[in-house]
Image (cartoon, rainbow over all chains, first blue to last red):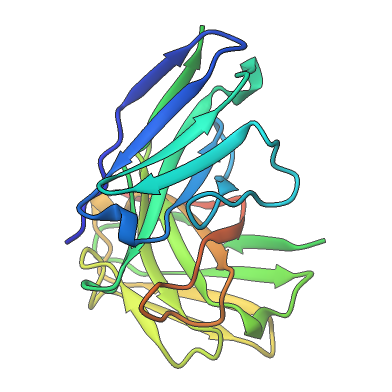
Length: 108
Length: 125
C-alpha cells in the first residue's frame, strides 16, 4: 500500500516560514491535500489539489508538489497556526485514501 | 450552514456491534461522496471507508474490510457506518467527511472539505 511520510515535528519562530514535507513514491503524480487539526477539534482543509486554498484560508498557506515530495508552506507564522498537519492522497492502485502520519507544528 | 453531525458512539464490548450515523445539512447530500475517518487517542488520522454519492460504490480500509459496512440514505441526508466484530484497536473518534466530488475515479474524489465534530467509540470489556 502507498505510504506518506511526514516529519513528526517542526518548530518555527513567529513571523518566520514553516515548511512541512510529505514524502511518497512519485507523489508528484498525485493530488495532495493538507489538513490542519487543533487539539480537540476536527480537521480543517487548508490546501487542496497540491496548491489551491479553500475560501477563508489565509494566503499565508501554500502548497507545492513535485517528484517524491509535497510541501505545505506557512508564511509569517502566527501562534494560532500551532497544530497538527496531515497530508492526504488517493491511491488508485489499492483504492485507498491515504493520510500521512501527521506533523506537529510548534510556534516557539 | 453546511454541517455534518455524527452520533451513535459509545462503549461496546469486544466482539460487539455499533452503528454510527452522520446527518448532513446545508448541501445537496446525494451529490457528494462521503467517508468515515477515525483517530485513535493520541494518534493520527486513519481513513476507514468511503461511498459514492449514489451509494453504488463503496471502499474499505483493509483493517475494517469484512467487519464494517458503509451506507447512505439520500432521502434522509444521512451516512451510516455499521461496525461489527469490534476490537480494542477500533477505539477512536470517528469523523464523517464530505468529499468535493460525486464519486471516486482514478484520481479519487478530491479533498475532504467538510468534517463533522466526531463521535467517540470505545471498545473495552
